[in-house]
Length: 224
Image (cartoon, rainbow, N blue to C red; front, side):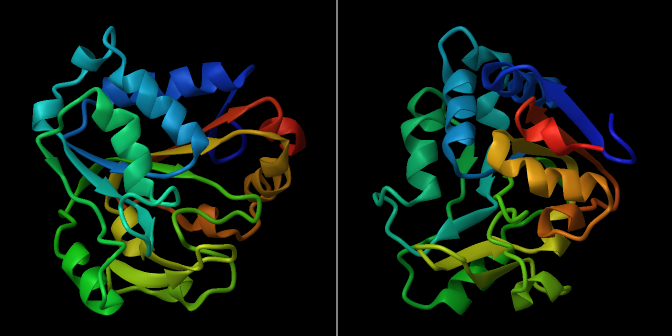
């Protein structure tokens, strides 16, 4: 624990990935919101390993996504593809709701997806970028101020630029938010958040839930 935030520091990347998976198993979620990125992919593989896959009743789990790039589901940039090649290669959730990156009308697709978000999300997984962004909530973008809609089209600060993201009103429905923050490149943003500075990831504050930051030694190097 560091300051007012529950920041849990692990010696290695593998130990941090193990910790995330243990927290997911402990929570036994019925709704699980997925994120993208290589770290998440490592966790998904661990969850889906033959020795682990029965630790969760996957048939009772609904999978959702925190954000997606506006690309087809077979694109290497697709968060859905990452999940399909890792987690879904080993488990069969009761329901998988992907954001349709290939949809022609982004506003209509965002509205459709917003309608799928339940009143409560059990576990939400989030990574954090070097700039402190999470999901596709990037610094300085108007989407940070969205207080009504649950899912909106958004703009990334690197390619692919066109995206969808859940907003804070959606993320704040979570009972448990697990942030993966690994590597020295994340240290500055994590240190700033721990000191109380405003970064997009710092704004995730569930109204009736808890946020746990799972970090490695490299990412923790600038913690106060």
